[in-house]
Amino acid sequence: MEQSNAGKLNINFKPTSLRLAYHAPCHQRSQGIGRPWYHLLRMIPGVNIEDMDAGCCGMSGTYGFKQEKYTVSMEIGKELFASISAMQLQMVATECATCQMQIEHGTTNKAIHPAEILLQAYDERRSG
Image (cartoon, rainbow, N blue to C red; front, side, top):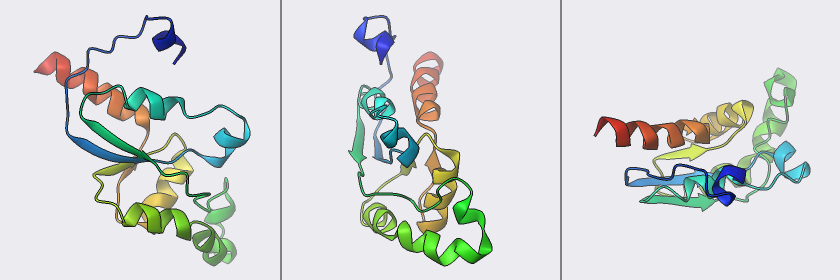
């Protein structure tokens, strides 16, 4: 976002037709970082992105990996999973790898890092 704000970001993206949900990881929210990837992805023409703001996915670092915490972990993420599942999405974007795993486990949606979507927008522009 700093590059964009300074007018130094290449925003010559190829238009796409992509419907996404965006999930900001809890640790990112608590650090006050904001949602930079959400704003970057909105710059890609044709990206329809919904900021989920539906709470924690329930993974909480390694908490959700523990067998004895599985039920609690999935219960914590229930609101987020329901919100994602209610939408007609192609995928979910989130910066956190453990959130990606938990979202894929709690929904039928693929979850990837936003950088992959941005890279595809650049790659498609170059290869097209």
